[in-house]
Length: 450
Image (tube, rainbow, N blue to C red; front, side, top):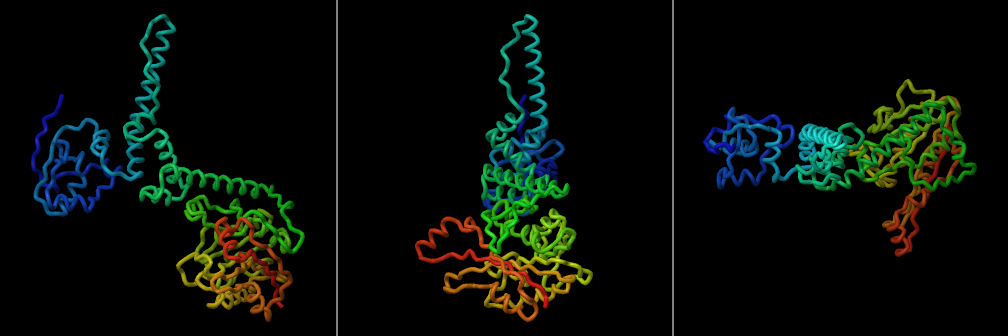
């Protein structure tokens, strides 16, 4: 029976917002809505229960209060299905994907109950036919997710992916930036789902590495180089990083760490099982994880820690006083202006070879000498490059070795060139067109105090 639709004026402050609406939607009125109400008033009446609890019109109510309207038009009528009616009134609303997901979660319980009833009815029809009855034509099989998708006017596959995206983010299995970009229109549901799958792959890879390391099963023997030129064809190896929840990696592919084999070789050649390996530029904890997997002890820090295993500490402060028994200190610092890691001006990525990078890095190395024990070593991983604009070589490793010559002896100088895959195809094409050689030069300086 249709309810009588009588519009009555009610002060907006006398209407109670529905708590279910707040669970699903953002009730903040848009600028366009406020301007429309200011010019023409409220054209579409609000809808509320006889107890004056809103079902439709939360944004209009707030806009009216903000504009100082004394009363707003309201239809008061009984509400039999709050969830269903709230969602129905918002069918044509411009919604974020977060709001669509919340609608789906609200609709799921009743859809699952309906699906269970259909299953029971199907079983009864089947039993009737088996026992000689003619039954009736079975209804098409329909799952709960199809009911919800149909109600929200989206495809079943879109809804399935949407549920997976939000469930992964809520369980901290993928970066929340995926949802932020999805709501902002920067990603489609398909793209966001692909990023969630990438995050899960990264998490699984790290979990597998942790399992191998925890049980002493990590075999690095086939990864050792026996000359002083270390060629690694993998651009990166993220199996030693906990990066599944790092938006820079999952969404942007930003990943500045060298391949794991580089650190595996440094640790193998210049330390022994049980030694303490220290990393003052820990980043996402790659060196720390590799050292422990290889039977070493590890301590790490960084200006902005991206992992729970690293202490937050500016490398320029030197080691903490209690740290004085390191056999190997590995430093893979920011190289200055190639990639800015933080906004903190203490970050070496804000300096370059012409603005004090060499001097600042040399001072850091000298301070960390205090953490060495006995004949301990410092390994510096330094990338060089050719500055195309100025047509000059930025030979950081050479300049740093000269700066430290009075305090340290370079006991080994190892070439570990960047992988060919480090350079994207468009950069190779550009170099060919302009007759420029791109620099693959990267070196490892093994230093021992005089």
